[in-house]
Length: 246
Image (cartoon, rainbow, N blue to C red; front, top):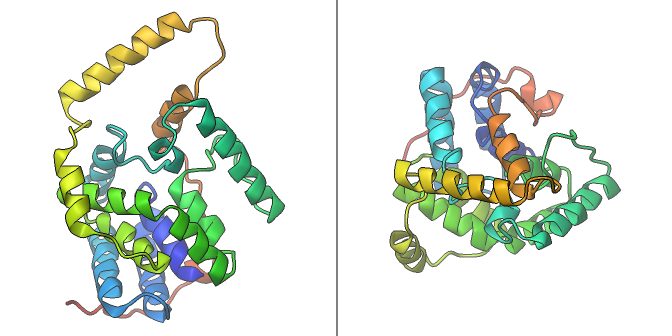
């Protein structure tokens, strides 16, 4: 499903390559037959802003949105298991799912990274895609609302995925939940997390590395690592088209 490749691409760290693929991304969205028109129009505007904006500004925006705090993390199991042992087993199970279906991932990549997960789903039958998205619809709903309340255009991606899942979100309930949450991306919150992690490091010194350290490493690698690659079909030049606006 080419649309999932587009959504995966949009959620990656912005690069010059991404901006150069604007026409191909737009063409893939326009050719999709499952996403409703309203979602398509919103997604097209998102692609235009991302590809037409100043690259350094887009990169700074990305880091500020996804690299500070855990509320908007693109690591799915972080929203379910945190740093518990259950998360490690969940990642092992997902990794095995990938391998069973012919997908090998880089050793530095975590299997629950949302763009990677979408890249995998793009290779699966529609019924399986919808079942997987339905399984994580609660995560997508909260992520979308958090991004929306932080005035980020990335919320459009979560909204599109939620629509594809077939599960309607209770927007009012989500808005109330997110509004009541304490922000974890403020300087004060980040300092608190750093202090807690330092204490944990001292307490655990000499033991094996925790999942949290791997997550931190994954975040630091975002600017250096391009992990998801679209198929040749999507990366080839597409006929330029103008996206409609609502």
